Length: 321
Image (cartoon, one colour):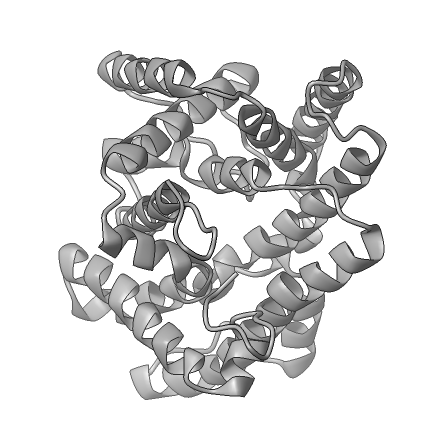
């Protein structure tokens, strides 16, 4: 189940499948296909991040988060902000931000202040803050099965649902951090199951049953809209584990490759869709939104500055975080 460098085949494949679904959901912006994907596509990435979480000294962990998440976030955002006026001028459209001070304000606040080609940028700071919170709790309670974890997570879930209903303002995706933390914990809890074949098999069966029961309620994590909160999040976890079960059975190399590129694709795919939507059909848009960011990822791996500032890698590394 692991590669020579210790990476999990199936986890990379699950990320690859997940990022394909993310792209499809951003091309098909309405309808049952979009709602079905939205029922679990972003929770999947939080569960997977939680699965590989390990407690680390906070100083070292913060430095790792800065390198692997914050630095690429800043780099991609600056580049896309700089390119947007140029691309929109060529297309004959107004740029997303017509005044430089509005652009700077949006860059600093992030989250719900970023829309259009930047709309996905809420995810990375939300993930980073949730991971920092998880690491702090893991340092106190290293075992996710510790009774204090479910108590703390029940309170956190309640707070997350409440603030999601109370506000739609989410700088840096902070509004979603409480629920993201709960999903991270569930991923870490899953990792403690020694032989999880029955769990994953049950999730696969449950996912099939859920998909057959009818239309699903979408979960929009950026807006902290969790559908029918507890039930919708439970469905999201079941579908996420079901997809991971599929990835374990068929850990195809193309999916693994896309999984390793998933952060780059996450940053760039919405911009590709936004700028090219008027000129291509949906199927072509999906292909372009995967292929062009993947090509950019390959180019970035060839330069030391690309690996460091856009892929979040250590100088000697050759693969993305």
